[in-house]
Image (tube, rainbow, N blue to C red):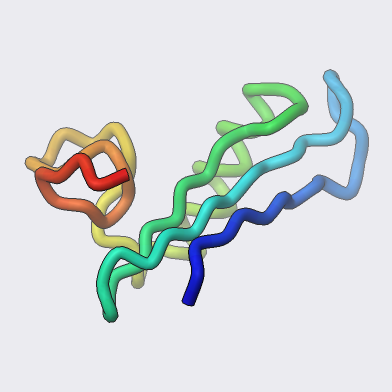
Length: 85
């Protein structure tokens, strides 16, 4: 599987236009995939709400660690003490 990038666009206009999120997918090992989400356009507060209320709860059973959590892991989801990306 090759690494790839996709863009998700919100269905409605927000305060600063439609929220657009980029998801980059990296296969780092046969059973390990890293997905990096970032806001491409739209309101930052809408992005944070989308991430915290929609993405995190939906993925809670399969995500190893989240960016920014200080638990001994790298800042990117799923990588442990590594700067591979």
